[in-house]
Image (tube, rainbow, N blue to C red; front, side, top):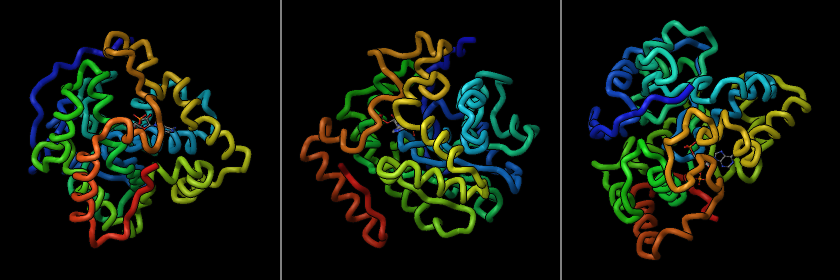
Length: 297
Ligand code: A3P
């Protein structure tokens, strides 16, 4: 099956947040009345922050490490993107589709905290939030835009300027979005993790996520989950490295692969000193009251 062509339409705004055209206004609106179930799991992250990685970990935990099972269906179908359209299936907005999906429902979202389904903010279901240092997010985002034909492109400098503009940044201003999740991290139904920490200790994070989800897996099962969610395993797997999936044929340019580098510190190859200092200054100003820091290399 190949994916339908998604026309590059203008970005849209919802409650002051700018959305990429690949998200869908009807879906974002439907999220406001989305009925959350106790066993729902929301994998949330700012784009390019480890969303897919966390989706794969969660999905494998639910499948007890059985990658054969998990790889039969693309990750974006197993853990659908809540505020988008079901392009590979019904063509309807995902909240509508998920209303009649069996439990447990695993979902991905890039929504800022205040736009999550109200019942999730009231404590229903579970939210795993994955944050990544902003410098690598900018680089990863630029590369995805440069490599995907359905994305609004732009030079690195243009995309950088857009990213640091609160009105123009897609899915919200990074510093506001991450801050808002951080401030809610101790709500009983949220686990806040960092991309850089997962790189340091993947197994420890798989165990942490399994515990948070109330799943008890044997050491051997945990090892299987870990083996199947390393960067190299996910790069080889077309169910996670979407650009290897035949459905994506013709959708990319410049030999782009979704699993691009998966490193901490690639920003050093892209940002000028001036750009790096600009980001440091915004971080100091916006995050000064928070005990939240990120490894940068
Ligand atoms: P890079 O572009 O820096 O390589 P998201 O899923 O939120 O869109 O994030 C995509 C980023 O996460 C990409 O970063 C991708 O390579 C990285 N990534 C995905 N799976 C990973 C893994 N198992 N280990 C390390 N990085 C991973």
